[in-house]
Length: 410
Ligand code: PEP
Ligand code: MN
Image (cartoon, rainbow, N blue to C red; front, side, top):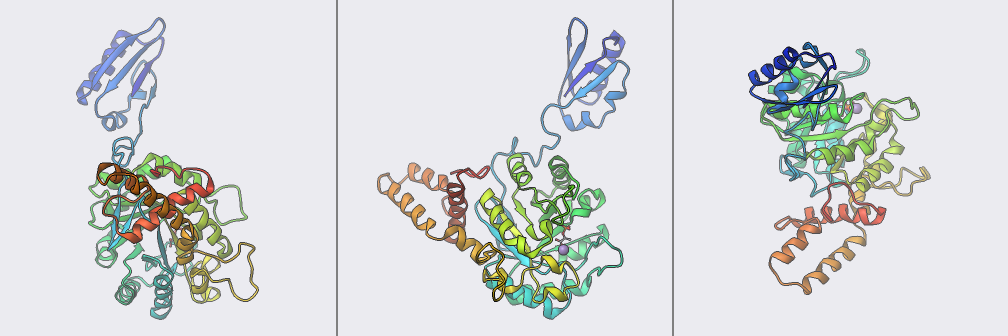
């Protein structure tokens, strides 16, 4: 951090800043220019940012150098984090599909969605028992009964569960059922709630606030991490812009920035981002191509009957990658969200990639070189085969779109 003094600043003003910095446990380096003096601050920046330095006499402005977030910053932790949600690993080495109902409406409805999810190849079940809504008159979720239903769906399908928590006082009992606690867009800056989930032992899926910058989103993640919980998955779910053609504007570039800036996994929710089921598959594919670590998709067996967000829900058929009903072409060919999303990325290309890796291995000694090679193909030594395939799919996607997905070590 650098403090720039006014041209009129006195020696006393400069000494006052130095003194305050020393009191905060830092060091101040004064550099006197012809017309202005600047003071470089070295030490714990978090402590300095909490000080009202701008208000000190003689101070013109303060320049922050470096990131306002540290614990989640890639700068200080270059190795990407893998977050375990139940048995599912979410991170740069896999592409996970999270699927399920927007809201748990009944045992039957949730079970149909959960079965569709597992059959389509999803690895985590989503579903809201507590629903934050734009209108207070809308369905608010089944609460405790919703959690019980989610537990039944997990028992039946084996999928770990991510579900939203909307109030601090609910964190403990939601965490008893959830494998991952979701913080929704409307609560991204609810610091009381962030503190609470930061003290929980369960991983956190932190959705981007609908008007939040990437920096604010990462600051919210930092808040959770500072309370002791670094098991955080970021989720880009669209932001509010002037555009009204889609529910929100999917900021895929923001997803990539978040991946570059932080070591946390970043996934994309094309359902909430677009609000329209026919846009979900194309945007899911775009997320995969851009290097996202997964997608989260709404599913409903009868979207027109849904109590929540029916317009953006995929039917079980659509989720499995089957055409959207007889003659209902969207112009995007077969919709490949879950299983098919993997297939789509993998088809044929994995064989080529395997051949490429095999080819290299044949010419290389077994040992550090081939180990490096496997790492560079996106599949670290010891990675289970199905994860390795997803990893390859991700790196292959980059070949086919002609650019490197961020942070993906090809
Ligand atoms: C949800 O995922 O159910 C949800 C409410 O999403 P968001 O917070 O992104 O609106
Ligand atoms: Mn929803």
